Image (cartoon, rainbow, N blue to C red):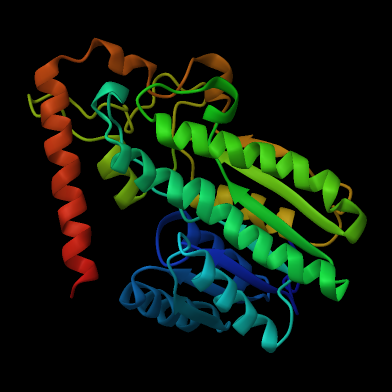
Length: 297
């Protein structure tokens, strides 16, 4: 689809770049010549990903551990990158999410998501954008959202609220920073199955039922399937490349028209029983415990 050197000479930072969608976008950026920085909380995962993708593509991946909830750590990390020269692109991909009835959410559970998606995304966006403005350097910022920014979605209230805030940030800063040559856009993916997200957002109810979101047949999707990683990577690469500088302030859905044909993603969960929700919480807790154990190894 693209010229082999479309992104040659560009330096792009991908938050949450060690796994899932971040890893796939990083793979595409490398394929088209970019030097990529990836960050996340698990350094071991970042190291493995960097080696894998460099071996695969021959490109250059820099990695560093970073908790984007810590504004001081974010500013220090961005300053350290800019010592060697300015970034050209930023992908706000780091996120967290799980399904829950809102009445069951504790303040800590809400903050666990909002502190990453809402606060953390702003911290790193502002740290990069402020330096671009000071240097007179043009740049492109891409945020990974969800179609909930238009429809809302029950049972994922912390994420829906936080991503809606970043949707507003994208539009607002496109105007405020446009005169500086800084573009902001966003992608709202439909289901692109990744191990971590699928475990939290499509857990089994525990009674022999299929997973909550029919990820196999996707019968409710007009195209009848989930997204393919290359499709997301192609869109992200296009938005990072030169040649579409007039495109800014937009959130682009890539979901097979699913959100146009149905309500919020998790509307169907309203018919679950209390026992179903107990089983879901147990499944999510096991997934979270597994992640904690990985981080501690």
